[in-house]
Length: 575
Ligand code: PEP
Ligand code: MG
Image (tube, rainbow, N blue to C red):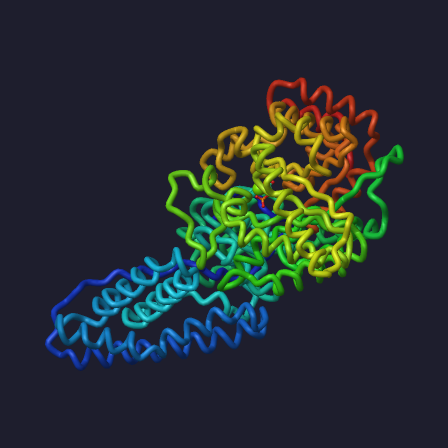
């Protein structure tokens, strides 16, 4: 019988392809005393050469599929395999300790990693060196043990990726031509890997718990991202049925595509804005293809994460300029660096914390490391003349945080003007509302900001004290819970009371159950994964704002999440 695996439906569509397991093999080994030290030295030399050969292949492939910049990290890895000092230290260790190659390799590389990491606070480049050595050690060890590492950059046929988890940088390395979808053991619908899958328009299932145990490399997998179900080695009939389901979804998408150049307007003629969320300028094709009326969230941290060092002002300027020019005068909301939580930079080590999601992150880092923040703001200010720029700060909890960020922004603006650099005098400054404290105090914030953008992915997590990526407690991740709806309503009403703009850029904005309520509350802008835009526009066209206002009133007065789902289902019939 076909093995069926269920999980959380994270990105729509149906994919059928061979499984590719992105799981590291067991690289444990025993330390042994060796007489034939020359034999061990030969083994380590051979393993270094094989690793170098792998890395050269990977670099060539990465250059083709992702571009020279993305492939640079592999050049750094190749340099580690060519480092004569590293190899001679390992050889010395084999001689002095009469130990096997594996043990000597790990002892020496651990020593170098420790040394570089201890210098990383003063010089971020050292953390990067440590990360390079760690990666190369893993590869050399895999050769010594005769076990193959997965090399996602070398994939050259259509596959479905099977992994325990996908970090944002794993996802960023995927080649869209070959990766048809993915299934992971952990993660929730709003984990970044899931968001990335929606941006890439590939079906995905997360939080399956067992995918890596139940699926073997090379199995045929049907991935139904619409219902969160995967079939392993399906029968011919099942294949046919799922091909049909995939085609049906494609047909629906074709119908929505007709709305690409239309306005986002309700049945009774009220206009809204539907924007797109992007992570890099590479996502701009999806924005245009799906008829977005602006970029409602540009997650700039990917610029930092895709790099091997802090991106320069010039690098950032080029990216921001590209997005602004491409959007041709439509508003572009750029969020300043949101590092921390699950988003790490190899070259900027963050302190070990008990609760990184409640820790040193986002605007807190920017205000503490204002050197990094100022570089980003200068790049943004310089790019502002190429379009309509809105800037927002992530994870703002208090008014003084916003004021401090605004002061730094104004200082950099004044400096640039004094230097004779042109900047726009119409840049809007706003905040993300992701922390309940800010949502509750929205009426005070509204008197100082130009706009709000509600980040429901985090706002729900913090309000329910339920980690957005933890599938074990995913039942608490309740976007329609009346408590969340009341926070959202307070933010929208507060903005409007002071004539300010209320946007939402969390995944809730594109959710077909939440959207009617948000239309009823009068949210101004809905920003979402580009691939959700046309479906949202289609739904919006079928809604009457007065009816939806009544529905929203009932929803905030309900008792539970489920009650609100039932209310929407009973009151909204849309195709
Ligand atoms: C959010 O928290 O809703 C949000 C849009 O930010 P991110 O998903 O990048 O944390
Ligand atoms: Mg967030």
